Image (tube, rainbow over all chains, first blue to last red; front, side, top):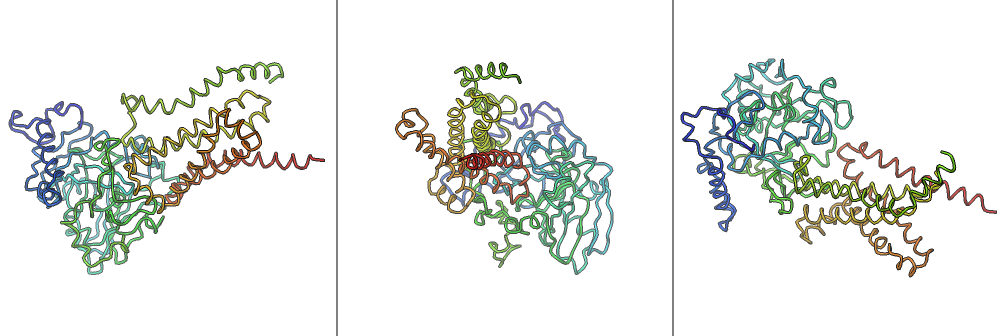
Length: 338
Length: 214
């Protein structure tokens, strides 16, 4: 959390009486209390109960850092969209990014993404749809009401964060463009402009970065097209101005700075799958039972929260979103389709 | 450089003070982590401190192994003898960073769980190679004292310590394996080039000495 959560009188949404706002410390303590229940002897059943959104009352979204333009989102009604866990500090989640278009070091994007021009910006939507179109950013921002979604993000490298995104379900867009009967997959293309993105000059991946989802995965209400985080527009290093967020898959599935969304009949050849098929599958659902060839995926380190000497925390199947998404994969061998 | 100037420089480098300065230089990375980690200065240990320490200790193990291997060629090429007196200092510090690296892996990554460590080493060749390099470093560290050197006798001691010609490539392979499948093999080009030069130079010298024999 920023050191002075109340430094900004306007937290990004309307409060009738500042006196009614729960002080951050009290609020965090309540969360600690819930976490303790969740971690306690009650085990999984109780944890499931305590973590339920029925109890989850993020009285306030995390305070706005006051760095970029405001982009408020209403609390989401989508099941599983609001985790009770503590959000990763804005400073951490904007300084530690895998965005190879700006370099392979995780500090590169924060250093080099400043030159990315996010306006004007447009996204081409084409392929197997009845209404192909090019949408400019303003049209996208107006397309559906903004929601705040507090999601866990699990990186394939073994670390995780909790991020309060702002955006709307990708399904909103998909419905409007009317996929044809042939559409079975959705492909996402990231901007690859060597003039703005120094990493594109390296051959580390085949550019542009392409990601993909099965149509039913893309239609799932948790699949988010995000335009902001922490109540503000996306910082460039986090994939401005528009990115995908698929919380039950490893982070690299969530393509950043999207310029094209294409509906296809064939399974897209995605960037990492193409680069190292034995290490990165098309699905890449978070799965503690399927190791990466070079490390275990059974545990993870929560950035900014787990102490240096703390044991890593167990990774949950589907990153903890199994209740919402496991049915998408009923009958599939997830060790084969990893 | 003129001969008298070179001799004066060498006299400085031969002083115990020079070796102590090298010792302090080798300490700097570790000191940096301790200071940054405890005070948060210069961004502390970064967003992912465990990763910073794991990578940093590994990188410095390799850096110091390469530095140690550079001292003999440096003497031959420059005529300076002083740096030869730093070999033990540099070698022991390389071992110290390797030990910290092994500790960071076992503790920060594996939670000091012996079964997890054994399972991990069994499953992942790149980790096993790093472990092997570390095990091979142990006898060198243990025989670094004057007493051990006398007990072994110069020739045998030297033969044992030639293990470093195996350890450094293993260390580099350990790192390369980590980078390769992410398409980032090019990132270790500087280390690979330096190691190739240092080992290549030795091969060349050996061949030349052999052909000089009557």
